[in-house]
Length: 290
Image (cartoon, rainbow, N blue to C red; front, side, top):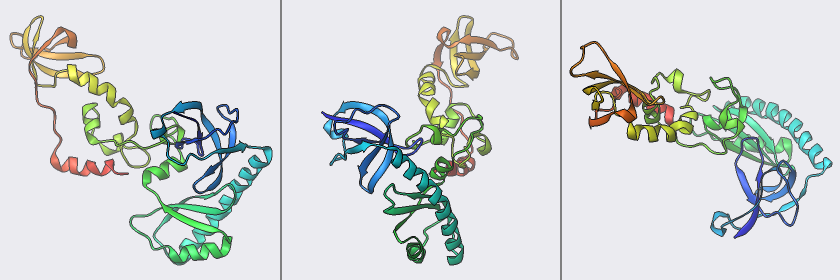
């Protein structure tokens, strides 16, 4: 076992493990740490704990010190310099006529490097742009192409629920989200209703899927033949979260439906799962991308 603390560098960013180096650290403490890209400023997001050796990427870097007021001031100054860097970079991109959209600029804590994050439809030859930027800033320049979901995470915003985007607020990584999840949750397959501001499937579909997986194991599909306390019948509709099904009884009125709890019926023959048109599914698959 090895003792670590978790440090996060951005709101909603991934938590990385560091050796606490004998320091008494609390949640929310600002710290200076050694990383693969140099000295960085971060925030303690996970208190000291012991984890298995195999869960740590070796060599484990150290927390150098608790951040001072001077360190915090330096970070604030870097944020201001980043705004100017974005402006300059956008002008250079326009001058080189490159098909790329600048999303964010980031100075490393020690100013040894500036990272520019951008989106583009395909690969971009930005070698001349890097040379141009290096001559202006007189430091190392790195350009990173990111996906549309990463762009939304960086820029932030509000979802259709009216709350801060999950990816910005707390998600430290993106998990696969599929059209199958939307279908199993009984959602409309209208792209505008199941997509986030990034234009991809909403991450909250993944949050709720475990619950739906458990309910689907015990709930019959529409069209299933079931035995109810009032006789056999065919399932006409399902309310998955309420645990209710509406059944058209074989011996009942043709237009009359009876409602039963899932626990009160027995599945005799399950129905077929609803299927979307193949062309529609192919179009919707585009929403699953990064």
